[in-house]
Image (cartoon, rainbow, N blue to C red; front, side):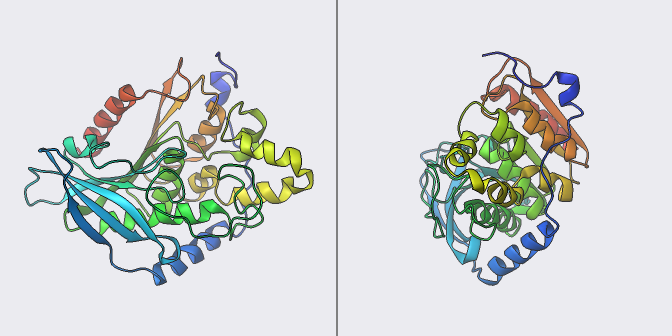
Length: 317
């Protein structure tokens, strides 16, 4: 492994190659409107997480098209009566929400924490939607149209999870943030913008700058794009046009106005740093990025979480 992308000074000024569809904002406005009309009140049931410092609920809420989506809600056991700031967390590629005790650090730090399951991946939420021909994975699932693509459903879930968190009695509705790594980082951007979160914290985000990623990424999942197009050569224009509706760069361009803390790994062969900078440089709001010079896709890991703790302390004053 070594450094294999643009020089650092070029990364810091790089402009992504993604094209912004003229109906991008209207497409997402109508998508969310349709799903909100099919929505129903979230359900929650307290579960035994075997912990004493954190309380956990099994939450089911209405996602895309009113379809049920699972989540964990973690709250500090000693929280008192004041509403808490909330972090909505999204999972990496192929992962689900896991077990109730797996991801409780944010609650231990004093925040409300909603961990959204990922439809059709490694969790408890099914994906009811059109599939059609694709290569294994999710980037080409429903590729013929932005209406049928897998990520239309998942991004809608992500946005509605922010709204669910905002409506919880234990949560300060004016302080809901999004967080996640890799796929979760891309969802933190898209879900944060669509759900109008107050800030976003994407780590080594996936789902950014698809045209460049398809050319230079030397690993899956981005290689799903090139693997698919190696077999379906005439489909390149349609696939890249469809993916432009789900490119985190375009969410940054159209709605990246709130504070953001990004991270990037400069030896990342899964999500090349230029693709991360494509989204970061398109972000117009107050922003910072932590660069991990000698790391692959693991990024800063717990070191990055320290950076997030400190950033949140400043954010909340």
